[in-house]
Length: 533
Image (cartoon, rainbow, N blue to C red; front, side):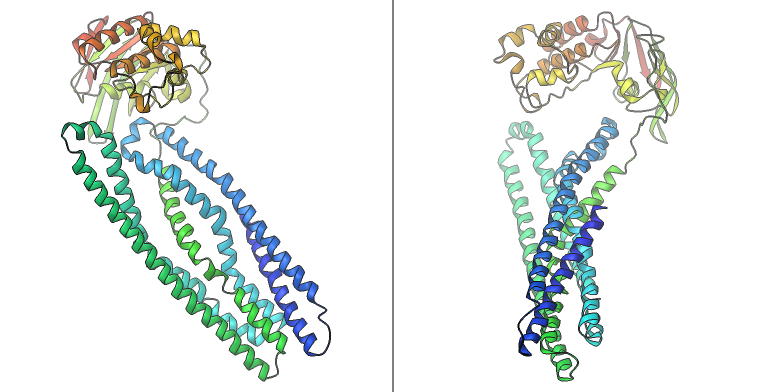
């Protein structure tokens, strides 16, 4: 609706300006005839009206952009969470972040401030021709109508010429961003191999290559814009002046009407004035819109079934059950084949097996990130396929092999599990995770910053913070997926001691191949060749 209003306002601005130009012509004819300029007020009102409608177009466009940008960004974020961790390898993180930030801004600017005015601009010459035909001279209007198709042809030709160049630039920029992200993530390895200088040199060369392409791109664009604008504008104005002189000599129009004809023809150049916007806003917005649409159109691996409701009180609290479960990521490569596993309330079962056997797949199934291709997965007596995903993920607390700590304070990271928790509850959770002394000696206590990705704490401390979060969630089921995989022996002992405290009285599934991690289990199940033994 707003887009239609913007188009109408753009047309109104053009018509008001056309009225002002007509009034100028009428005034000149009046003066030539020896009368005073009685239509000056029409010229003034037309100019003011044109300015007012132009302001309305700008304001409505800005408002539409401001509404569209957060909505589109929220759609991107919702899709990221809907796809879940099982899909995170399908898209480069840098590319998704770029689409959710710069891409969203480009699309919002394109749809909010460019698209509707451009549509109006491309159709404005038709309005001008009609005005000329009705108020000045039908023959002149018919002649100028010949120029109308030339404008969209010119715009489409410009797009076709620069589309390959634009694609190459975006590709080069993405490659550079990927290289820089890899360098940052692999900073430790680069330092160990003493390869930092070499990598820095390669990044500088890549950045210079992108900069050169950008400069070439901009220079070529400016040159073509100048040539197109100059040639077309000169041709249009010269043609209009020539037409006005011919029709004046033929006695078809007056002096004032001839001047109005030339002035009105200048309005027909409005689409050319927007070619620059088409390059900077239009083409970038179109490309970003395609990428965002492609990302949002991906089907999440798991979604809530239609009409699912939150189950009543659990019929079997603390129970985990896999019944004849099969799963495969691809049709020809099964991961699980008729797997069966049951944990009763308060039982601690360790699931062992070689790397790649499907242990983490079982964890993803229990968390609702994947659905079995066959069979049934249930928590607390409820088939996960019949329950909302929010309910599924509320039933268990998970500690994975790699803990991600968000930039911010220790308190911020703990409150993710229990937003309403008090400081006393946070401290209790930390003590349960054997981090009491750690937080007591930590400058700032709960308000201490953990650094980007938790770099201010050790790997063992990060894992125990994850355990504290699991404690705060207070779920009846604990899922431990290789919780000590990336820590030293001393940290492992601390982590296992804290897990013993936190998991007491809870149904616990420990997924691991390390003897120290599984030795405390009530029983051990082994995953081999897709089945559990």
